[in-house]
Image (cartoon, rainbow, N blue to C red; front, side, top):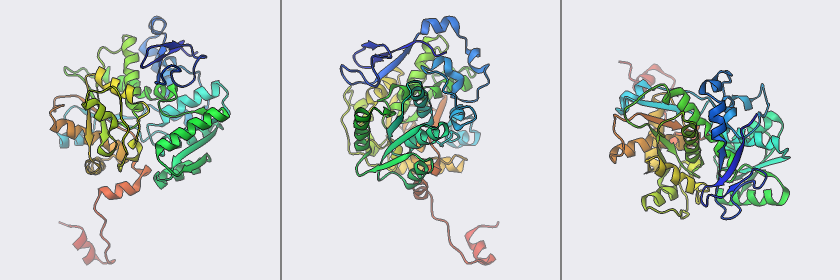
Length: 415
């Protein structure tokens, strides 16, 4: 049975019952936070209750999610989450950070972090008997919705900019979703999907706009707490590096850690470091300038998953960093590609947006914002198979040789 909850506007603080609002605050349009009944949960629930179920997915946290069990047993929907958190000893040694861990999201069913949000949104869609779920996406969110919807027979419509990487479009089409390419930006697709939901009564999954996306993404914070924070005691605060585009991932992580803090299960929230690409740094710019208002940019970056003109969850993304005493750092496309190559050399093949977390660690170290004594978690948000063209930009080309040993010896040192 799901916990009792209400919505609260992240800006004006007004509260609403679940039947009163669906997406954003009707007074100011800002994103809604889900408030659980923490007093009741403290009385009824203990941490051990979560993992005693043995559920190897985010659904082990159902007592802390505002949705009913969606069913879907024996399908990819039940495999979302509980991704590995790895010690990375060789990467630690290479970077000079002996207390570093890697949270790898590529084992999710559609190979990205976005499966978490889509899983919980689909659970909500099944509760309210939505006929169609629609979303705008540069690829990963759409793939997550398309794949998980296919697994449970839910109709899905995906609007993607025509410039989205072809492998991501192929993934959308293979899942059988109704895919429409928009001759415009992600923001154009976003606005069109909202209008479509309003006109035809579709349930809109859009990042941030739908409050259940944050609830899905907060489950990664629960896992980091269960897998690491509650087991490894440190004298210095934990630092978590997070790629940021729309802002919903970092606001979701903050919400998860905040929930745990409200329950008395987590004493101190980790410091959240948001990493943005130079060509899409609207939130980082507002943070640096000390502003609460985020001005749109004309986004251009190799990291398409974090390429956003106007971040739709920017206000909460600022809040997440400010309230955890974290920071925003900005990295170049060159630094992102270098980070992709470095991660690949140690066994992680990631897309550009995921590599931004390592590029952000480098930048924060160079700026004196973190030190090698800090315990660090890098969040790797998506597989490199999502964008192989970008991967080819990150590495030198393979030589082409004649099929002879002499030619091979010249190309590959044998000593």
